Amino acid sequence: MRVFLVDAPHKIWPALRGWVPNPGLLAIGAYIENDFEVKVLDGTVLERTWFGLEEIIKRAKPEVVGITTISTCFIIDTFNACRLIKEVSPKTTIVAGGTHPSLVPEETLRLCPEIDYIVVSEGEITFHEFLKTFERGERDFSGIKGLAYLDGDKFVYNGDRALIEDLDSLPLPAYHLFDMYHPLYHMASEGKDTLHATFSRGCSHRCTFCSETALWKHRRRGMSPKKMVDIFQHLNEKYGRKTFLIGDDIFNYDRQVTKEFCEEMIRRKIKVNYWFQSRADYILRDKDLLPLLKKAGCFQILIGIEHYSQKALDSYHKGTTIEQNLEALKAARKEGLFIVGAMMMGWWEDGEEGIRSLDRFCRPYVSHFGLGMLTPIPGTPFYNEAKRLGRIEEKDYSKYDLLHPIMPTKYMTREELANLQLNMHRHYYFIPWFLWQTFFHFLPVVRKVHKHILRYAWDVFKQEVFGAKGWVQPGYITFEDYRQDRK
Image 1 (tube, rainbow, N blue to C red):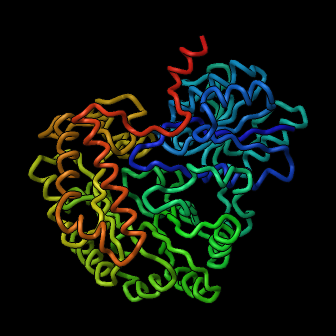
Image 2 (image 1 turned 30 degrees about the vertical axis):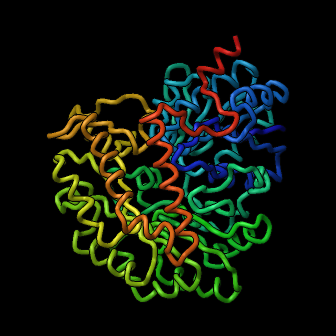
Image 3 (image 1 turned 90 degrees about the horizontal axis):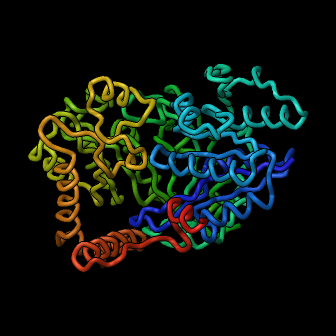
């Protein structure tokens, strides 16, 4: 039976200028490929994106399409892809998965009737059971845990499926199903040899704004150090990848695993660089491991600072303190690591002066000021509360990208928030210290990151002042233009 795994065409953010194979499709593809004829379609890197997707689906007419959405801001693209698929191959059954459909399955099914079923949360076993049932010609899926669908107008959810406890039992991600040599598969800020890798699922903390902890119900599971290093070694030796973003919510969650991972990297002499995300409390706990992490290839840590105000952190249920945040930044900085301070503006009590304090709060310690917009992701406690209070003004999900303001604050409009964010980024990235690091930092990968940021800033300046066109990936057209051209 032919099964297509699809990630809809997306417009790549100009600040990134690169793309990565979808982690969900990597996992699902590896799990089902021995039992079914599997093909992956990453619409973002297809030639002529939407036209390319149409041509392939029309020609192949797969029995089942599994389509994923990694983020709320891409759900409209997913809906459009489902409509396209049903138009050119009406008999194809569409099964959706990913974060957004899993968090709001009923809404997703009602907004996009072209979706036949949704796999909620972890997909390997649920989707495999669905395909086996479908292949036998059966159409009663009521016994498959983790599956959601509409029965007429009635929403049906078959109940939660138990999560896979042993991630080592899963096969290596199916990178071979993707065109790994496509020029867009990299992170432009770190260079052509970069890639994304994920070693765990979920987070045990309770940050109200986080879709990951909502999706995995405050559970976290991780691979063994050996399996983690196996993946790095595979990507390094087979595809020549040398720099990695580790996509785990908290990479150093388990201290012993972190230590053994570093020791295994050093023992195997795997010469790669990587960076990861963490929290202040875990960085402080593992201060003594920072030199070992650096020796094993770590060059950068993103620390979720979130805000300068303890009141804001407490309202998010973050579970960290301002003092911990500062001490963690100092500790990582002392080891010579490149530090990204991830912060959010748009807390209800934020005013202009308070938001500017975010910059002053972390500037002495961070290498990169990651200032995003506080975004209410559907299905999270933060979204539910903001909706109850009537604070959500922007309803267009494509704007839920951490870049666009979705809500005002008590003191600022959304337009004022957007202008302030732009001005703060301009101010930060053109100070002499940042420019000096662009050309003279001892780590080549850091110089690459800084040069990429300046190149993007220059492009934005040309667009604003001279009306120049912004960067768009080769072959991309909007769904609306595709529709118009198709007529």
